[in-house]
Length: 227
Image (tube, rainbow, N blue to C red):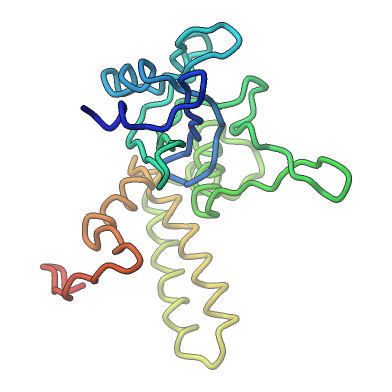
């Protein structure tokens, strides 16, 4: 018997499934899955759900092209709800919004919700847009137009200014210079074709997953690069 057979399905043979962006942690949508949908998800690696209105399986992206590649399935403590950690290929919502949860309750009204993604990912997305579209008057466009040597020069300058700021009292200057350095690194990554996700993956490879609460942390070790 597999874990799929041991889930706590409701009277219709379904469990709720939350789709979450595996890279950013953003909640994308809520849907339902049957045992057959879960088996199909495991077989294909794509998010498959059960449509209660059509009474049929549906693979996300079959009509819209916005496929969700499932990186991991997580089961809650009572085994009656799931999380699909996915790599989304386009927006999750039928409205075209990235997430179905794009509105926030503001008192008695609904208002546009703030972008919940980590700021590095949001800035990287903007840098990517500048790289592709090259809007006039943009500083980022200017850097890409000048090429790699100019970008490297700016990274070097900002790194030096960060070091100098760290030698001074207080942290305001350091905060500002560090932000400048990180921004220019994102520009450099884009110029070189290095996805930001690959940098995060490298850090994850070096340091591994954090231990769960209540579990013993692994003994410290020194890696080959000295971290």
